[in-house]
Length: 61
Image (cartoon, rainbow, N blue to C red):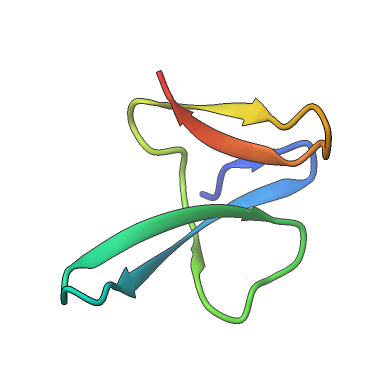
């Protein structure tokens, strides 16, 4: 089940860094992105909202 926040759905995607390490990034989207899969809220994170733009983001507890 995907986590949603006021119409925004949380997605995750694995990206490969220049060093060769694979890192998971999380992002919110109202539409279905080209890549990434819906996911639950990761352990130890809460949702914050950018006051200027109104966009949600993840922040550590």
